[in-house]
Length: 421
Image (cartoon, rainbow, N blue to C red; front, side, top):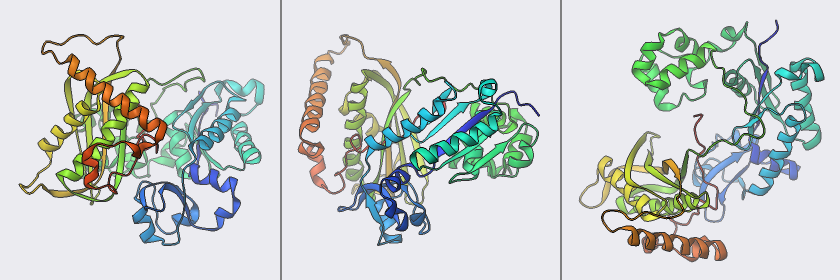
């Protein structure tokens, strides 16, 4: 059967760890992970190899949690420049055969082989050839999913790791995917999964067979979107190599070295995150209107809230202030400062971005001078950190617990990717 489109999703499995193994093959024989500061044992697991996976170590958990599972775990500090270099070289292999290559983070990409048949023959055989070229030239294994749309191609690459090669065709996709758990579908997260399962929607097939209007009534526009995904009606194009995805939001998050038990704990973490988000906004000359906050407790339950602020900002103190308002509105705090629930990770971000104007207009309350002073403080701190290191200048609040605040969310690339849309 001739397909209307041939879309491939390629995923460099446990990318950071695999690149480290490529550089030093002896690492394949030990439990190894790429993560934060090994000596201080804080930060999070960014990637782990197959040996570490056997101990139940998971991406995103703290280094201390990982050490408890495997005391002999060998940590490697991330080498981002090398990861960027090798992943770009792998994508260059994809570009030998098509100009429609769309990155989905460093380690993943879609590419469209629909129009390559006249030059290179059968697109399915070509995809296998590309997979082998990556392995032969760089020693890196990539899993591939091949389908007639991007969503099913992504699903296919997740179904068989290492050098998996999964084909999901127009005439057999229901047989292959309708029995899979509903959260195997892209953008069905924990909260959405819970809502669906409470209504008896356990599999992708269950989702596809429900009425689209019913799904929209419980999930909003996302319910409609997920119905189209599950039913195979996803027609978005793979962007060509000249396409650059517009930045829609800036966010940073951290898994703390211990549970956050007091309002001071949260305040210290939020200052670090607010400074990082503000600095990254200045790097791209943008301001944001909506501050959002996510808190995860020790039982992995999330609180997510957002707040629109009066003026678009790139100022750390304003982002911090809005975040603290969200905390006070949504977190129960005892008079002692203790929190009713203890939290383990925090993400702080800003969205509704606009380009920063060449000048800042005066506001009605005469606040422009004050805001410009805050912006200059941010700039001075960024310059000192850039020249001498992150720890050379800190807010006084960070001195309350130097170990808790000893992380650099910007420098350590603790960045949350933007969503599909």
